[in-house]
Length: 288
Image: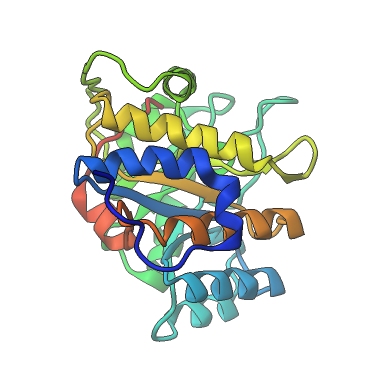
């Protein structure tokens, strides 16, 4: 028997029916699907950041806020230190400079020597630590790109781990899982030494500069849920959702509001505190 969905039913939940049906499968197994949020590119207190905080407070969720150390304004530091803040700071590169070729942006990609990447990573950590301390600092490479060589050296530099996104392989598997409800249980192991705390779904369409369709976002989340339910990834591995508050339009804010209204009412869902996510030391399927 399907466990009841806790709480009230929201008018917008009907647009998330495919996702809710998958979560019902989790309820049948008495399993909990864990989600978390990361938002990128913060360096100042803006109206968009205030709106992001309002979203987090209304739905009772915490958000990892990737701040740019080389552009960080003191007002944002004070803002994040306020008691009761829903934000957990992460280190978003150094100055968020694009050194990549056209179409392949990156600050810590393969277009610079490893020595330069290491030096900028050290500068980023030192500046970040001046404001937020050195305990369990997670590195978030701008544009989601970082070389394998630097990733493996992040612990030596002093970072607790790294947060990127899914590889093409994981993304393809999730798309396949979104189309089928069952597959053989095969656990995939990345074999990495550096801790990863990755995001998996970006709800913003960067070509159209607006929200993706609810259907496409729900389908992608379902795929990642089924990777976990079918044993490709540990069931308890959190699914990361990516935000970019500075570019969100009304459709994007509405999408996240609708997603949170629908899922927080479901008994199989938990939105994790960021400290719990990074404290687990969970290594996701994603390869860098």
